[in-house]
Length: 151
Image (tube, rainbow, N blue to C red; front, side, top):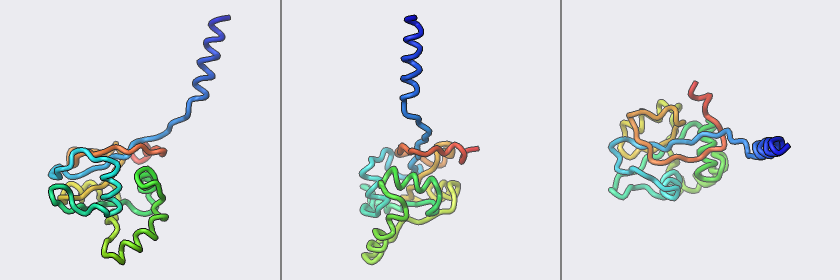
């Protein structure tokens, strides 16, 4: 009787746990970039182009994936708390002040190549694509799973 009560309680507890089907998003820079650990605030400022230079005076070159890429949508929601589409007005205003939005690359492999070969470049990838060409500077929690990108 006591064992059944404990089993029921455990089963109920498991059913009440939130289902998590998520992956991290890895923020990357080139190996030659002095930034080794970034904060959320730093990343927001870099990707919103409010911070144009690193502490060592290296020009930041933030990168994005295509507007409709699920990884970009998750990145924007996780870091900036907005959909990429919702940033259009922001970028229109910045453009008239001489600030351009982050460059857009077509794939995670393009992101890896650009970041690894360009001082100051910073981007993001699914964890399974992290390799020795780049360094991880931050991991963002994402509500989405990117496991299908890795298969």
